[in-house]
Length: 587
Ligand code: AMP
Image (tube, rainbow, N blue to C red; front, side):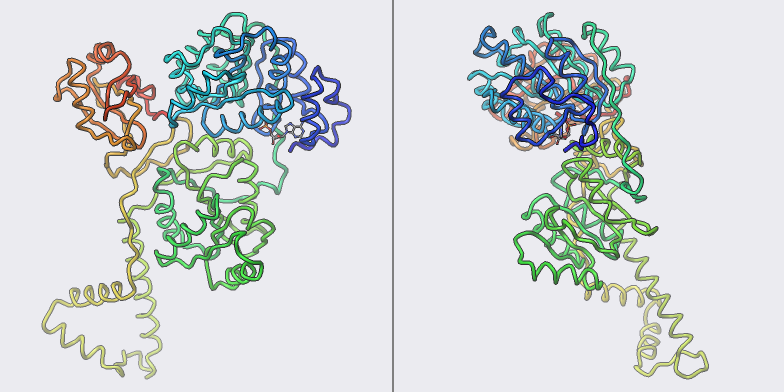
């Protein structure tokens, strides 16, 4: 909630041109005064003006465009054709943001009975299509899916009254510019257009010049986080595919070896699963969640305080109010829901001048959320590669060497004889002397270390964790170590381009299916087809650039894979090897 207690000189919601049903919901939500952006934007937007707004998350921008959209919907609903052409369209960069926006609009529009639908990539098209056919007032969509639905004739934009681009800079960063322009071009000239962006790079201005008509401009800077709220903490993020998060976490924690850490998870089920995985790696981890009784929770926290356990795996709710002075690390198994929640979590470390460490495991689709954190705190989050199994092995060996060295030195200094000569009360030296007579001395020592490691039980490092890359502009990446592997994202070879197919492992698609389909339906031969990467819900396939247009023409946008239609198009992240792209798509 935005604290507007002190903004008594700005208008009240009742001064704004909003009808009773909307005011009622606002009142129920406990908003007392409009935030500055709402105060500036709502009036002109209700009048139908276009708007170019610079505002970040947390300024109240969602209500700033949602309330006028709902007000206009209520005004025009009698004339607006019902049926399958929506009144408003909101484009958002990611599924998460789309859901958040949609939830807010639904809430504000409750009294008006507004029908709001969210559509995004990665989910089956069928139900979204059906819902659109039943008639909706406002569609909140990620650009890729909006295009898909429009191309299939499911999303009609010819009677659209208003379109909002939310977090436009993010959408452009993610390579959605073509999709956005196509969508804007498909809307009537008379529609209202609203563009919100946290930053105003030249590309946004160009887009605004092309599509907005005499827009009013509003610029709201988010207030800086007060001193002390964003502590000095070393913040590191590890980019991993969602399915490998827990495995990667085990490795990172083994490499970091925190003295006392809280590992935040989203749900109770995650807490249990993560605790189990970490324990299996030999880390001392304990679960803390709301399902445990108070006494049990207190005991667990006590064990962390006293150093008997090193990791507390918890949900936000369970960790609320926990104040552990000794905490060295805050670990985000999942990216927190909001930038504010992140700041709140990491505020638990780095107190009283001590160094704190914040670690976040982030799937590529959530890099945008970390960028929002960077904008909020003004502090960089560095991306680091997940330690490989080989990194961990060499770290373990270094630790073994350090313990041996320490022990050797201590024994030399304290041999009990005062002469500095090694003692052999237990006969170990004599036994080894015998073996060294028979075998090489280093071989003997190496075998002893291996036996010791086996007795201690080495953790299982599991499968290799695929390297993924962040969308461009998303990270101050340190170059991840290349480990090959089919899931690694790399630029296509010179002279080739990459096609994006919207079916992957989840539909049972294998490389040979793609070769078969392309060779069947176009004039490509198997030899022309280059590297194929199969991901969970999509696949990328390299083909010669000179053949691309012809292939796309013969496929007419789709092919059949495993008995189902799959869309095929140029991978927008890679316009061709010569263009030097470097982004994966994220819809
Ligand atoms: P947003 O910038 O749209 O992401 O909104 C940030 C948060 O502020 C959301 O949780 C909204 O529910 C809340 N909010 C929006 N407008 C107001 C308002 N006028 N007063 C109090 N809270 C608000």
